Image (cartoon, rainbow, N blue to C red; front, side):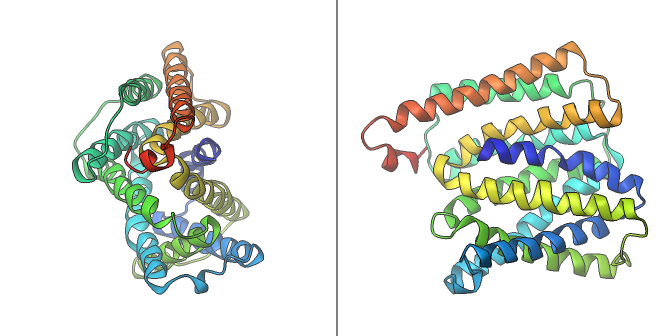
Length: 294
């Protein structure tokens, strides 16, 4: 589920670039993305009998806050950075977050880090560096936003892991998206961007954003998160930049150098290590208890 989610998330940067080509604003794009996704996910949640209004009030408010504040902040900083920085550079910076999750888990939650976990972490980060290497860093507000995105996303992952142990994924996703939709609509209103897309191409892009890297990606990630933990979910999610680069080659005409192929192989190897490590531990007694501490 997490790997499929990463594939869907891999379309995010490409669709953002296409939205900006259609003349859409940042808050306008994100407002329509989350409004449409929230409508779809609420319908799906009701169909699956996961009515969010039946959630415990405390968890419902936590999920709303997660969407309205944390996911809002991550999405806004990332899409703002994408407006001026290359997609490859933004993806590279965002993929510092697996390291941040592991470090935060160790520092604040006293989680252990296995040797194989460390190997996978190094391999995944090295792979991302090779995959999107060659970027020239320059100090700018866009770079500040790009660095803020993985920092905020680390908090989103760790909070989401705890919340998702007691609520169904689709219903939770609907609440998170609704919270983000409200925040982005307010932002777009005050920025004068709360307007319908002017062309069919703009509608196509926002519909794709709502469906693929939002409805599909977020619900799958939230469903897989409590099953394998935050750190492993982060490492498996490094498949996302592979998808982004492949789509950039196919749709935007970007070149795919041999060094990027090496990076992709390292990322895939890291994902295999994570899955195999989980499989070995699952076969041991007490895995369910130990999993919560890793």
